[in-house]
Length: 178
Image: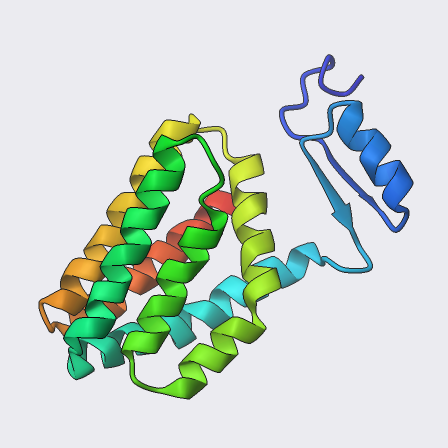
């Protein structure tokens, strides 16, 4: 009913999985189980990730470990293949960010990001379901942002890598909350 009245995005929150599934079948853009997912926490998580992942990228550019940098490139390739096949690119997207943490050569960046996995994946899904831009345009933007991060790390430019990650995650915040 609300879509017919002009709503673009219909988000249904509930604690009951049956009602959430029913809402999905009736056309809800996004359903949120509030016992497991908290919308304000998505923004807080993105803000936290700006600091965490910007520093991980800076450290990755300093460490400049070729094998680890190759892992970042492989994650971008996996994301491109998933998009081209029409599949979900959420896992390869997360793997891209995790590969940067690995390239930092600091296990604490890796374990912290792994601990955030479900919140990060929820944020990616939420961003995609709320975006008004066409899917292919969104994918191109995110891939461009990822390539900029990769190129800065590959070039061994710590400040550029740090700034590229901050821009990417701040763009995620803007896509969701502006």
